Length: 436
Image (cartoon, rainbow, N blue to C red; front, side, top):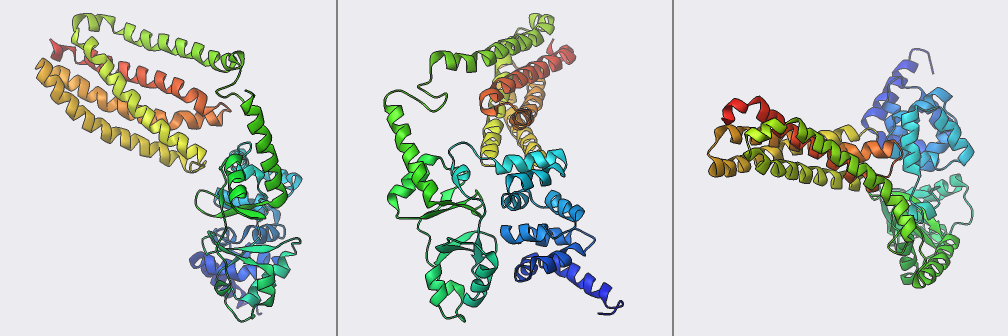
């Protein structure tokens, strides 16, 4: 290839990566890792990143090893976290940590979180070194892909669509004897069972008891194939679950649960109750700052719980949605600002609607335009703050190593109480002339 045509070819590849990442990834998977890495390392923008993250995890990992170190680190940092995590799980623990040490600490922390699963969950039991083929291949292409994998002790291959979602399975003996010209879709069998990555071990055992399976595929919340629980692990899980059931029958428990010892529960709960007491004093101190205002306008004392109660409910709603997002791993390092902005917008919209209803009720009760204005404005402010606090509290607690499920409600109650009292009583003090 001449030097004059080389830039044109590079530009064409770059455009192909940018506009057709799926198709480009499919073609790269049929090449050797060295050749694929050479093509991906050439573009000067992030077009190659989009294509690299579309590769199957085993192919992406093989390519990663042949990329220049700086380029490989850039790919891991700029790809979708789920894609980077899937590639890193293909590596040994030692190699994985070496790659993570080269990444920005926040990015590395997020990837470690994504690769960690709760104890006794399907994600912890699975082998993440997934091997699959795509459903648009021919039998001949599938056999070539199988030889390139160089994996042993395989009885069947799992098949995914273009989005990485499981679409079926192919038994190896059927693949070996099928006509090479056939499309893979013609010999695909339906899945016998599937587990979600966050399913508890009990659910995995239930599947094993209902279905005669030797390998259980595991998918994430988006339906993407992320791992396999092998037969030996399935049998081990069945034995462990049986022993746990026996322990539970005689009053023993895994961790702190309904049957945990009283002192264990006290040690876990009492520190947070003491913190809650301190925060209650903080909220009371805020009310104390406006003691003279309350003494002048006793109607404020009647309406104070209304503002605090509504902001507390708004915060609890945002907290519940955020906690679910954390558990399901929908909230990542890149997406949490969008989550906070969404809850702020919801809090503002709900605040306006609730403020209108409250204003009508207060006007009927008091006939005071000033009191109506005070409670309406404070309702909007406090509910907006509550939405932000409900989203941000569990994210920050988790970031600093605390258990959001145990401590979020205490922190949130403090924020909503203080915000509600401060906004209502503060605005009432500023507009006191209208309350005369």
